[in-house]
Picture 1 (cartoon, rainbow, N blue to C red):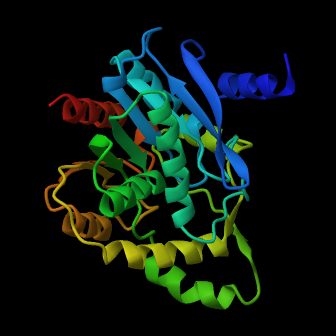
Picture 2: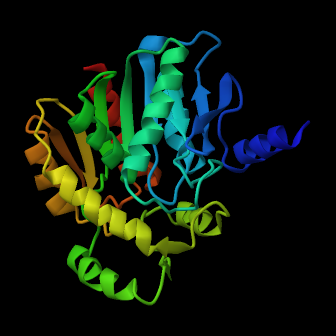
Length: 289
């Protein structure tokens, strides 16, 4: 087994990702590559039931293995990739000059899917991943996505104005700050694994924060579109400014269906069983309706 195969096997084993009926690919992106995975519930890939999943900031595909397993058990194929600088993907770790880099990465993956004959699919994004999908829809239109679900989507982070006022001053003296691990999930076992995850970032780049500020301003200025997306949001989320974000997304997507998950934290995909079941059920119902 070569080094690359060993790295992938370790990744799959460590995060309990499906290992059968899965294809791996390194998608060329910028001067590096994105780690792309395509999971199928059987040997036959149903191209009409494929979901592209985008993870959040600091996370990677493996963080969300429970959702991938659930979607496979429901008969969906799942395409997923680690964002630039995340997981096994290349690029500067957890830093971007502009959120446009995330759009470029998404477009590279969509090209890869089209080459595989997958020309229509559903999209599911968590946190920053949801923001990337929303930006794509507002910029490029719905195609190739039939349905899109945003879970705890970013527009503004929690304590937005504190961050916006302090970041320019801090940037004069520092390039990064230590990351504080919040209880992003009521699932204590998951939170322990998250803190111990060697692929999780331990610092917050002020360059990334600045890019987020610029992206938020541009996103809110975009023309609203008439697309019936689903937004799932926990009421105990302390990572994003969720009340503001729901209103902002409603203006951008007037037909969006916004659903609150009571006592749900930011990491709804990895919440306690009660909240997680609600999230998974709402998602599947939306996809099949």
